[in-house]
Length: 170
Image (cartoon, rainbow, N blue to C red):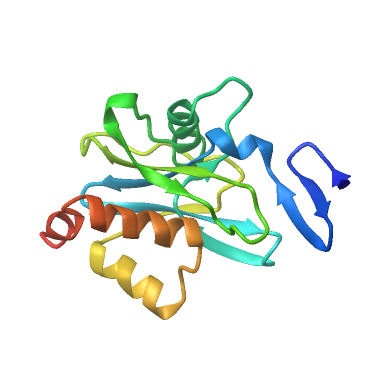
């Protein structure tokens, strides 16, 4: 039974259990990017946690938009970088909170051409942060980065690529 519904999600009651259905999440994307051997992060205010969050670019797909197209658009909107399909590799999928969310998000990994310059970012993002491998790890271990999409994408990249070796050359 639907208890509440808006443009982004519905709260569903199934007996004594409640969960959130996010139908727009099926083609959403979270994108771990490298540029000039640094990890591209964005800082933005997240009302749910009432503070700034440092995380990778991500977002919901527009109607009819594929996960890859969503990734390309979100990267451009949030960082100012232009990427293409051939610059992205799908690493896997993430169910951010399988206890209460129906969400399934595609995790992509990409490398931005070192010669590309960053353009101004959108108003939804405070700033871009470019972290070396060691800086990123320190930010996670210190609790500066707590975003589950970001940490999960990094873990997938570590398991599926030779990212540590590549990033350690800095």
